[in-house]
Length: 494
Image (tube, rainbow, N blue to C red; front, side, top):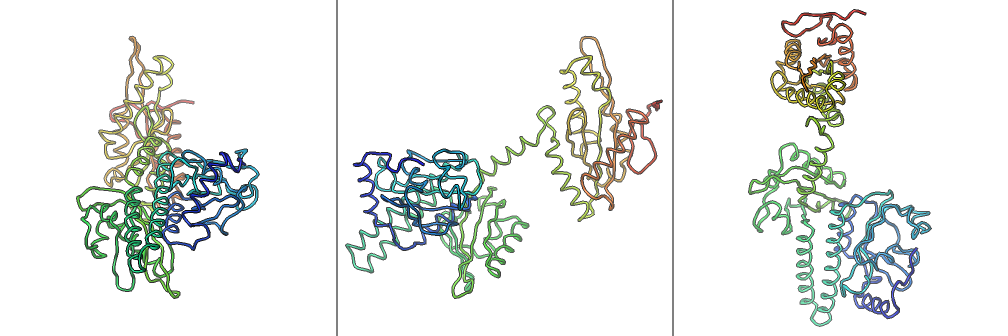
């Protein structure tokens, strides 16, 4: 663990004086701080979030979510190290950091592994922090630059709340009780509105007793609406696509009936017609044992979602051919089999193996081999295969997922055409090598047990076609050998 006082006595004394001036230590719980740690815990998916204050001998939680107790000794505090950092302290795995290996919350309970904390400097940005806003998890994890930016913004929100609280306290000392209350509410609301803008999060409340809905200003902004009257429930739901509308209504109903919180993400079209991605989190508000309202936060996560989609596309694409790779195809096949089984949608699968591809590489070189793969990939996106989904499984093996009803019904004719369309002759420096394609095909039927079972049947058909004659095809479950149109069938003699 780090030194308990990594600064001069004079600076530490000034830091403690600033902490004391805010009169926060041992103060009652306050909803604004509780809301921040609840939002932080949910946004980062961590097990613990706290607003921690550190004096000369202990750390104390102004707010905590996911952690019992109200603090611990300063020498056991990770936040007591973080508050001296110029920016964030991020430790992906505390058990691997010599400063914290022996810390009780790492070595015993609650066995925390990940920590990220931002110093709180509401009074003087030059002095060490009076504490931190931190998130912790019971597993080691990474923390992206986007996560770091969001934690800084939430830390700024806490600092704003602390300053707002201090301002409100000063007002209370100078004004009568009514004026003090009005000024405090106004100041806190202004600070919260500013914090909402900073972190891109709005808040809402749905009162179940009179069906009224209250939105904060940023919720109107995300909807692309002017600040004013909140639209009725049905109109508010219309911003979502039909399937998301149904799911969100179900989650709200479960929160009302069972007291279950929810965290929901969906596409969303705002009032200007712009398509966004939004995240809505809600929790029941209970009074006298009954749920009286659902309260939550609303966030525009479009930028983050688009980054994730781009990364997912890159991870699922074969860089040579531009087709989907095995990883992406297996997810697509899972969905197709599920639809075929539950919705009786047609489905057929073709595995295509290039004949003579090794000779292309050996004779003409790998550049020519790459050209063959790109040409085949291009032809799989047009002609007979234009309405099917193609992927490269690896090497010289491709796959086609066929879902158009007439293609599935006339699968043999489709396969025969593909045998002709996928023949290719590669040429380099006056030498030529011809390639063809052998195909194994299968139709989905009720006794298919799984996607892997469907792949296995197509593979068996491919093996049978290769055994008889390369450049032909077999449909699983049928004895006929399919050859390309007007091509002589030369059987392989063993």
